[in-house]
Length: 451
Ligand code: ATP
Image (cartoon, rainbow, N blue to C red):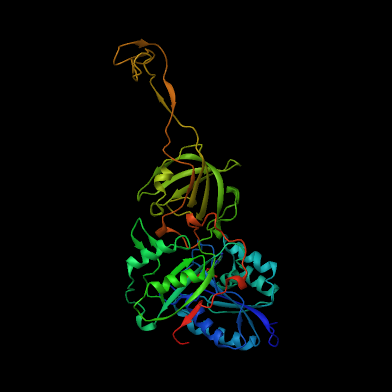
C-alpha cells in the first residue's frame, strides 16, 4: 500500500523503544532525523513531534512519550527499510522494550486514526484495537516484543497538534558521557528562566531550589528546555554554555504543558482505572490527612454518585485541599488510580479549581449587648452571662459565618511534581489555536556534531 514512486507524504510513528535501564525514544528520533535530513529527496513537513499519551498507563517507562516524524519523500521503501532497521537495532528489546514503528502514507490523516489518538490521551487502549485501526487505514507497521508499542505509534501519527502545543529542545550527550554527572551552571539556568518568562517553562523550581531541565539517569539526554517558540528555547540552550561536548540537539513540537489528557468531563459512573479527565463536583466528605501528609476526601457529581479523591503531598496542594468543606463546588483534573489492597479506587487529583465556597458556620455563645464580649454559658438551658458586666440573658447559641481563609481559583501542583502534560499556570490564556508550518519553521531546529 505504501507509495514508492511519487513525492508522497509519509508519517512515521514509533514508541516503546526504551526500558528503565536505558535508551530513549526521542534519541532514536534524533538519530533517524539526522539520516533523513541528509537524504536529498526528503523534506520535513512538520517539526518532529513528541507526543505524551495517557500518563496513567501502568506499563509506561517514564513519561509515556511517543514520536512522529512527518516527511515528504520519493523513495518510501528505502526509508522504511532504514528506519525499521534503526528501531530494531536502537531499541532496548532484551530489556523490556516492545518497540513498534508504523508508517502511514498520505497527505490527510484519516478520522479513525485521529479518533484513536484522542482516546490514547485519556483512556487505556488495546493492541487489538490498534491493529484494527492500522488495518483499516493501510498502515504498515513492524513490531518487536509484545506489540504494545503500536498504540503509542498510532497515537503519535494521529495527533496533529493543530490547537494548543509547545516546543522542547532536547540536547543529547555523547555515548562516552552516558552515566556521568551532568554539570550545569545553575545561576545561569535561573537567570534565563527569569529572562525568558513566560516563553519557557519548567526550567527551575524556585520553591524547592531544584533544576528541572536535566534528568538524572544514564539516558542520552543532557537537558531539555520547553517553551512557546523554537528560537527562544534554542537560544536559552546556547546561553547555558554547556561545557560537556554534546552530540547535538533537536527541537520537538509537543503537547507537553497543554493538559491535553484532561479535556473531557466524565461523570463518575463512566470512569475506569487509569483514565484521565476532569469533573465538576462537590465535596461530600471533609478532607482529612493520612500518613505521609496526603489528603483524602470524597466528591459527589451531579448524578449523586460519590467517589474517593486524594491529593498527594508532593503536589504541594494538600494545604489547599485541607481547607475545603462539605458542599464546596470544585472542578478537578484527575487520573483514576486502581484499587490496591489498602486503598479503594481513587481519583488522583492533578489540579484543583475551587469554584464556589459553601458558607460554613461556627456555633458560638452570643455577644453581650452592653459590652460586646462573648458571653459564658450558665449550663444547659440556663442562659448566658457576660464575664465583664455580669449581665445575664436567656437565649440560645448563634451561628456565625466562618472565615474560610481560602480563595476561589485554580491551584496546580508545584513544578517538580508536575506531569509532562500539566499546563503551567501562566499558559492559561496564552494557548495556541492553530499551527502553520510556514509561519513557524526555524532553521535552528536540528544540530548534530556529525553534520
Ligand atoms: P519514555 O517517556 O521514556 O519514552 P514511556 O514512558 O513512553 O517512555 P514506553 O516504553 O513508550 O514508556 O511504554 C509505553 C507503552 O504504553 C507503549 O507500549 C505504548 O504503546 C503504550 N501506550 C501508550 N498509551 C497507551 C494507551 N492510552 N493505552 C494503552 N497503551 C498505551
